[in-house]
Amino acid sequence: MPQKDSTTLVTARIFLDRACTPGDQVTVSGEDAHHLVRVLRLRPGDELIVVGAGMAWSADLVMGDGHVCTVSIRERLHNGGRELPADVTILQALPKSAKMDVIVEKVTELGAAAIVGVRCERSYGGSSEHKVERWRRIARSAAAQAQRLRVPRVDGPCDFADALQRQARDTYVLLASEQAPRGSLAPALAAIPENAPLAVAIGPEGSFSPQELALARVAGARIVSLGPTILRTESAAPAALAAIAALRGWW
Image (cartoon, rainbow, N blue to C red; front, side, top):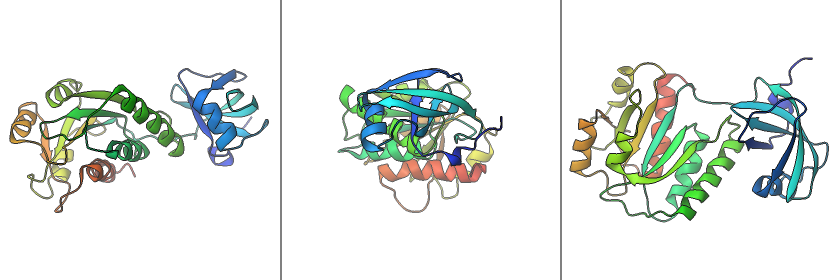
């Protein structure tokens, strides 16, 4: 039986924390059920996409009342989602107000694999378990909208030094700074193995302190420029991710 292309399906997409097999009857509850029935107004027999363990599947809504839904898995979609060919982690200094909501949404749409809230010397923003859970919900919604095959991991806040130390040995860290020379991003990427995992550190509204820049250099981070203008912290992460994807030829 020929595989269906994902473009033949509606855009409704939900994520499961497990793998799927054809014929599975999946129970969906909470926000996912509400979104399918109350927001998207799907009815029994309507099609949707279910993503589990990095694979997309065509599925049908069997029944649902906005609180609990039953979904029937049909077949795997080999063109059912989009991901960058390498993991990119965003190390984002906690901004004030609701700017982190915007950052999480946009870098998820652009393909970030993980987002880490970072406490810096000049950070204005705070965090709480409630905020982290909201960021995770935002990432889940944005991943569905962007037709991704996974939801980026969103980690609670940690100190800048800890964020650097937590990166895997094979992860290369790029730190965006207005002090870096213009045009420094492209050669920095050229010196990194193709499709190696990356982490991009974005500073707070007051920028990284001299001590943090020194710490990053000791940790092996490459200090790079995002252009001749000074970007707001909520603009810097999406700009960096877009520039990296373009320079790597991922787009």
